Image: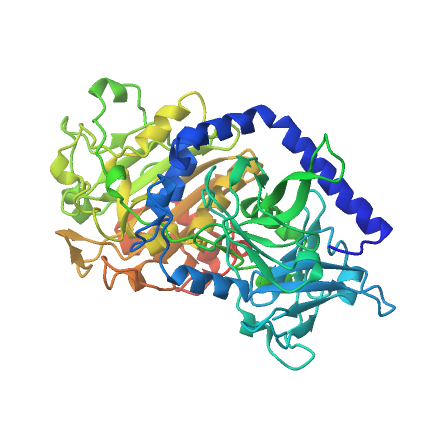
Length: 598
């Protein structure tokens, strides 16, 4: 911002002081990072988890990113400049008005959806200021240093406004048309990516900004990331007043942070030693946590705000098969507990139709069920995939355990009944968890449960765009887990693919088009509830070696429909399904998580 009022100056100084305090508290950690970066590369200095995520975001055909990360060269594809130009189109100058025609300050903002603008709280701290302020796009010079004709849009906080002073962000709606009649959608938007790992310590960032309220400018890879905090990033890129609210980009022009403050030098008044940005993942978490306060119209506006960078599946270094566990590992694995829900509630394994029963891949000891820590699996010998899985979830005892990622065969069943990496290498097919990794990770055996989920028996082939997209199927899984955790409830979840004779055959395996879930809980009033869900990946299966765009719907359906599609009999669960009383046989589309009926 520039030409600050007294209140605005106080707010800005408060942000700078908070940034300085965080910076000072991390001196030892930052110095360790910088010392490491003098002789090591970013992938050697940063955490293995972030490095792994960063590598997975490198897209097919990108010849240079990994080489830059390991210090090989500073080459970029020529279209890097074109992508930066496209990204910059969504960045605007914010003009703050005081109601009397004066402009006491400026800031920077950028579109993050066709109608929503992101900037700092200290730039637009309330709806009244936002209502009087405007966003100017194309406020820049052409190649001959001539001013372009800019387009000025009014802000519309009455349509949408969300702000937080701690994370120093404001998300506000923009009017559809400029004063000259141009559409806001002509300026595109910068997708916000919730995944962490978009940038590593030692990597460089670029900032597109309106310094001191002047024409749009860019700092390209001037300095590097020096520290990563839970909600903030520290870097040393040059910025000026008026740059508040700028987008901080990685080398792929993904937004990694919202620039919000310089870090004052505690030893030299008026001097700044670093800059601080708010992590995009933290902003998106805040927005998701405050969804309940929004109207239905506002929820629609932010429905698709969060995006995922398509992750390159099955990189060779992640395709090494782990050593099988010794049989002793499984001796204490009692698997799924049918009485887990308590209060006399018994939810037994489903009964199998005669065709399914004949197709069960038996264990080496002649049994039918593979028992793991807190979950169980029944395998199909003809499909080499799970017929179904079932897991106990204890919301009171959930733990946060890091990924294992070492997929391995289960020695208790013949490998010929398990699809290994030969199905998943060098294509767009992911090893999709059936029992979700986090669901059985609770109690004293959480580490064992986490590793148990990485058996080939627990994965099913899923196109990467289906498996990794920020879609409602993943949202449903999050919702069920959070529901159990927030309500400290126990939950049972059955899960599996739907087998059809006409499923496409790929590398000798018939790939399921659809997947289902049945969730069972005991409500506060002591009544049992059973709900079923269905989703299809069919749009993605045209070419399993290509990046195929597609769309799909998630449905809440009747338990009885899942029984008909799978050949499984869930005993009396259909009697506890709220949809069973409805006449519809199709089910209810889930367009948002609030549509789920538990």
